[in-house]
Length: 230
Image (tube, one colour):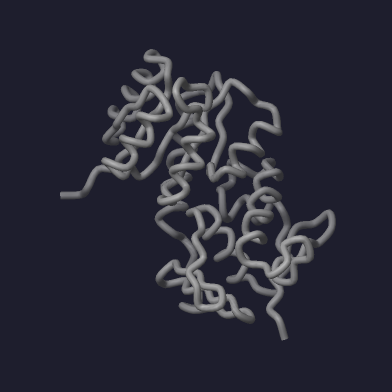
C-alpha cells in the first residue's frame, strides 16, 4: 500500500487550521496540526512530516524561530504563511530555512500548488552524472550528498536542488528565470529574490570566501554561472 504524504499545518487560528486540514484530507493527504511554535517542534520531531505549512505569528514561539530550529536537524520543505507580505519578511523567513512564502489571505488552490511543488523538489528531479567535483567540493547527485574537504555540508532540500541544477549546468550562464523555473517551478518565474537569497545561503556553505565567490559567479543583470576551478 502506498504511504500517504504527511503534512503538518501549524497556525494559531483554529478556523485556518481546520480549513487547510479539510482541503488536504479531501485530496488524500494525512494531516497533523499544531497551534503554536513549541507544539510545532514537538509534532515535527514525532511524526517527521513530508511538508510543514507554518504560520509566522504564533504564541510561545513564532514561526520564524520554529523554522530555524527545525532546520538544525531536518530538511523537509517548509512553507511559511503570513499576513506580512513585505520583501524583508520574506527574506527573513527564507534566510532562516523556509522554502516558500505564501501571504494571507490566500486561495487554497495556490497553497495546494505550492505544496505540490515542494513535494516535487524534495523528491529530487535532477538527473546527471553521479558525482561532480570542483576543487575540494564534491556533489554526489545519486546520493544527494555534498561534501567539502571530506566533511558533509548540511543543505536544505531547496539549497540542494539549486546546487544540483547549477553543477549539472556547469559553465553555462543561467538566467534568474531559468533557475526559478527549474528549481522552484514555472509558478515562481517572478520571484527573483528567492534566487538571490538561496545563492547567498549556498555561498556561505560551500565557498571559501562567500564575499568573494569563486564557484558561483554572478552574471550581472542576467543570473548565475557555476565555475569549475582549473
